[in-house]
Length: 218
Image (cartoon, rainbow, N blue to C red; front, side, top):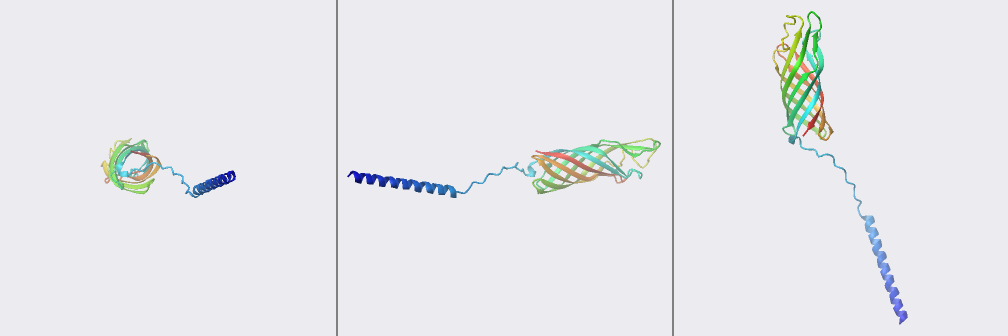
């Protein structure tokens, strides 16, 4: 009787051990065959649609005035400007600008018949399309109207009679800009532009510019 009981206990233990081994093998196989979890990519800042945003900016400007005198037809000097605008949609923007010249331009340096002038200030209203080539690069073109106010200083009382006291005959003029914005960091963009600021139809004096600056979107 005792021998039969021992045989039954040994048989039961063997079955339990076999079941445990099978369960362990199945668990190991399931772990090995489970699909590996892919690491999550860090998300960058969310790109907000343009039509929900506005911007302000500041530019360093190189002004170029042509047609003042034959001797110095191409006068270049530094200026500065600020801009504030809004995106009417993802494809159009509206903005206002104001700027000034930072240097006195010398159009004629003869002591007896000199001519110097300053760009006192200018203000512009512009509108135009833009193309968002990527989330981080866009190009645009703007057209509008600019009011430019300048002043002259001449050594001879009647020197340069064809040049008005304020350099130009009409302070208002058509203007245009071609530019590009490049994303730098979060809401900060770098901008490069060139265009025509003002053209006087009577004196044919033309003011062009090159802008480099930054904009902050909000």
